Image 1: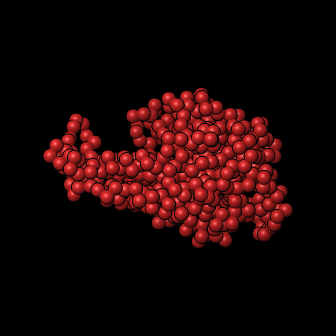
Image 2 (image 1 turned 180 degrees about the vertical axis):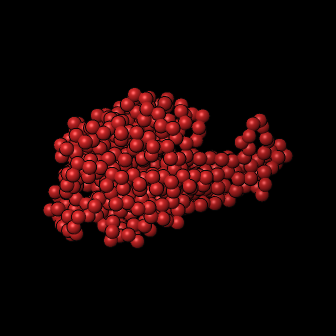
Image 3 (image 1 turned 135 degrees about the vertical axis):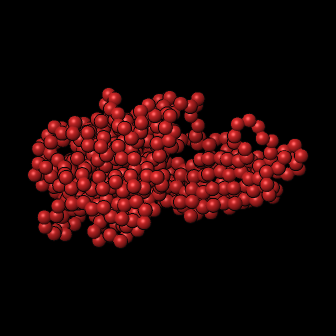
Length: 462
């Protein structure tokens, strides 16, 4: 193992240069003009995997390709542990470009950070795992397990083809656990195992009024204004204490255990620090819960976008024909997306005034995810984090959603270990996205140390 760790330390400058090459590829999955760039990025990644000693191929899908890379299999051994590492090479759109200090696909190193779109989400994080495996292969150090990397190009647009790919390659990908580094940690001194993710439902509601935009002077007051009706409707969905006011919304929510609340209290970020980080005048949330509990372990109803009427410069005096809102609800364990969608939609229809017509268009949905922090695999991950970072790790509930982890469980029968390397200030999805180079290096050490730790319980279970 010391050979592996020494190799990682000795080659950091080269690893950063290679990551810069990876980041220069504008693999934006949401924008059609980058379709060729995504293919080029997949080919670059597969080539790089072969260069470090992996067997790699680019697998076409109906959308963007999936890269599959494996450690060499010297002999078939059904008792040998097999783990999968998941990541994604596609990135968010970089706009608004004028807010970037330097171009988003021209990596810039400043201090101990590397700035570019895709650094922390997710190229830098899964690249750390690839470098750890390279250290094993290039030093001739035997891996105690077989590893398969599955790195897709559609995570930022919903992973539409990955579940189908998992089902059609079930036998090849069946594994003891899946490792994902696509989450975060509270700060550089608190490495974290994320044991829970919130689920999600998305939908769009449109309030229709008159058949066309109307002159507000001639017709205003005689017809209901859809923008006002929508605003009043939405205002009835949350009370002054931050609690969602939809009947039945909380029925299946399991209370946090004393152990979990104790773990959450160990997290380092204070309310004052969070307020400063977010740039808000005052924090707001459901009464009776801390800010950390509110944003990770409680369900939400969020308005993600609102539009109606005239949006250009100056004034246009109209009663708009329609008003629209984009909505997501974050869900916690035990809440079923289909049931919550029905509860929400039924209530919206009930309170919609008869003067307008309500249209609801369903979007994507996914269940929450929870893995026991006391399982042998979780404990193995915590030991690897502790040794790599030289810090006591913490347990997290993450407020975001990674819907594909539920498919890993349903299709492959494998739990997912979420070992994020991103920091709260890394600006994922925002201008000036960055990745801390210390987290990059420690992430490589964590990955190298993880496989021996994981392989002991996995081999014993086989």
